[in-house]
Amino acid sequence: MTPGAAMTQGAALARRRARSGVAFVAPNVAAVAVFLLFPLGFSLYLSFHSWDLFSPPRFIGLGNYRRLFGADPLFYIALRNTAVFTVLTLLPTVVISLAVAGLLNRKLAGIGVFRTIAFLPLVASTVAMAVVFRFLFATEDGLANLLLGWVGLGPVPWLTDPDWALLSLSIVTVWKSVPFAIVILLAAMQGVPENLYEAARIDGAGPVRRFCSITLPLIRGALSFVFVITVINTVQAFDQAYALTGGSGGPETGTYVLGIMLFQNAFRFYEIGYAAALAWVIFAILLVLTLIQLRLARRAEVEL
Image 1 (cartoon, helix red, strand yellow):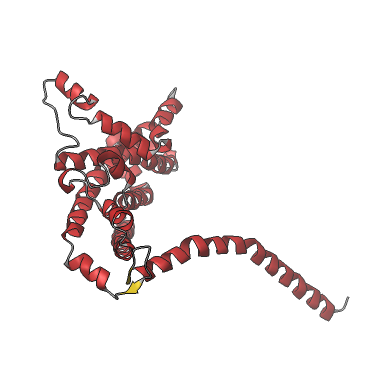
Image 2: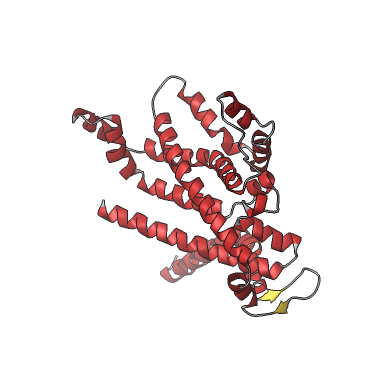
């Protein structure tokens, strides 16, 4: 075979391989375009229109955004509630998941059973468990108030007082968020070299010192990921809030978070364009928070 023929055959083979690669990738690209890119582009398009699902969309420019920031006091109520809800959820989730992951990261008899129990909430339906918690937090005959009554404490208005309702929502969300965070942090902890702990024990470092000086710095990436995912889940929270306190946002807008506001405007008031504008504002908030967290994480790694 001449060199020219060999080059021609090689080029034909490369083209066949390229076509095969395109054929394999094309279904996935089409799925991404249909189910991700098109909805994103269409929602951005609708955010500049007024649309009620029945009449044709009417272009209003930045009218939805001006109304959101300048003429809708419920937006700032939802934003405040979401911020408080995020703080009430984020801190306990990180602390509890760190503690439980540290306890499960041991070679003890029967540790697999405890790991299974800790991970069970991860597979439970959020709506179903929110309904269960709704019965637990009932003011009159809920299990939570019955237990408090046994120790001499009066009934707590878990779901009827605005402040307590937001705290109850945070408790349910923490219960649901902790198992996922445990999975991530436990996997990171198991990747820490054991010889570092052995050297620290030889130097006389106790369990707390080893955890703070070795474990935490080496799982900083996983911890940052847990921070970001928890913030995203709390800002987007809807299903547990709807199931726990109803679609109206709880007592006196106590659990009126951004997810509930989005649902109401889209599927109760049929203001699709306004809901799309709110969705893009939520996206912008999450993007800014994620970038800030990633920058702080990179700065901490550089300092380390």
